[in-house]
Length: 437
Image (cartoon, rainbow, N blue to C red; front, side, top):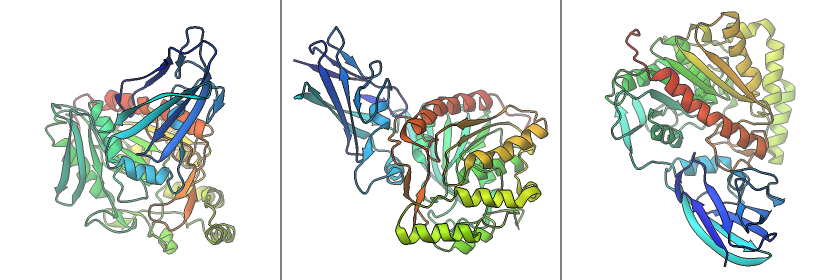
């Protein structure tokens, strides 16, 4: 009788999980199917049992199925979503912080050989979740119950607005980081649109976190995804209290606004500083881009905005410097990531603007721009999640968007990036911050 084992059965999402089938005949064809009703996603892969009658998914190559070769997390990232589910609905599910339920089922030479269930945790048992509503600050703080002098980070989601990316903050808290998932628009009583938002608001979030007993003498940084990554770069460049910045699939320029179906908002600045709108390039609505968008909307096909953004960059020429974020003014280390196949807005080219400014200024702090070949806009999420959805509806814009990348390269980017983020935050935020105001 074959035996299926999962170790550990309640791992954190970002931990490796061992899936092993044993006590089968050597040379048997073993198919493992993995189903998550939490994520509405499923994968399967076929293996050949070794001479000891064992299949270890982490060490043995898949010979058929949703992926091939040796991929320790292959059954997780290759899972295909059910109809009606995608990467955006997955992020919405993750934000509920409920354990992700999985069922693993095994067949040997075509015959059912048992199944077992297990969970992956988003909120560790020792992590305390605290709703925050102080002044105009809105968000959720995550920190271990005994945290003192823990590195602190403000986590900013993207242009989907009301999604706070609490699952990212919760996972960071399990690594000893006090993380404030900060809302900044389309949430509670905050502004409805991403137009004219005050950069000072983010600074208030940083200051609030610096005063928390969980942080104490440690430093505070900012981590942002997409438009939140753009905001993180601006905040870091504008306020010396920010001791480190992580900007994922972001832009080195201050960008235009977002207001649902009102595309004219792109001609207004998304951000203000000192009450004044930050400069921006004209929106990339050249005639070609307009036709591409109209064709996508009429056909229902996902819209790839990258081409229009890159055309706008090219036509702007030297004017790009006028709207570039002054990242060289940042008083701390900077980690940037981009996917080279990001079809949403070409994050590699946009992040390179910041990278070149840092190089030209002989920036005094450590900085890095990690470019991931073949990865798209969502190659920046934590690992061990399905990466097969490369286009999806947007949370606020009423159309489907193309995010780019492919499942394998998105997964490899996530697996490489996540531990680097954790290490970076500990390295640059764990020392006392007495020299800052």
